[in-house]
Image (spheres, rainbow, N blue to C red):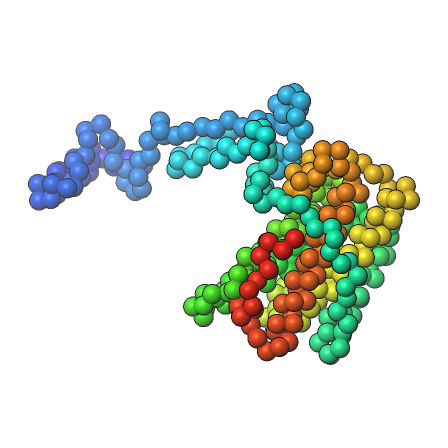
Length: 324
């Protein structure tokens, strides 16, 4: 609602008097309408960025990608413009959910058989908690390893985010550095999320599986949040055992692929770029690198738990940032 002529005139007069007292106060132009509240925005200076839609990409011979799906017209009033990123070969980078400098080649030589033998009461509680969670998963998914992997990643991506958030808040409360553990834990959460984005291209969840994800994530997030507040060493140990189970699950996934029970389809484009796979990579290659990632997460979380068991804090040991 605009102010009356008298109000606008009074406002202009007041600003004019202010200008006489202080020349740095700008005069109000005659053709500028002064609103009752807020600021008048000059929409003539707005920039518009047109991005290719899914249909346009397909017509150009490129594959549609989930990372940029549905982006059409982006309005930027604040001058925040999308970055134009290219690959090493000069072609346009098509993913908005991750950048080229976040990609890597997975270390497949990591020992997959390492296991932390539970010795203390806390370790045994963590171990059997994870074992008890595996039973309903086996019953529900049976040998549907694509859907099983998808469900697993919706849970596995939670601990890193919760742990990173709580370490972050602790760092703020105590006015101290974290030793890099905030970044390391958030890296883990992001890596697990990228696993999910990949398997979403392989196994399409139906409505009741999506409902199950919402229920499981809601319960697990809150339970892990409380568990981490009470005992970080227990929380990290439990995640270490959870990652050991993930290694076992992906090993079984590989057996099904090798036996021909699951079709070894071409790897999703997002996986090829994220893990720098060969252009002709297959689902088996994807499962191999994901399993290696889980082994690295196993090591990081058992290591974090060991730090707490020694009566130390995470900040006292440099975090394994970029440990893939």
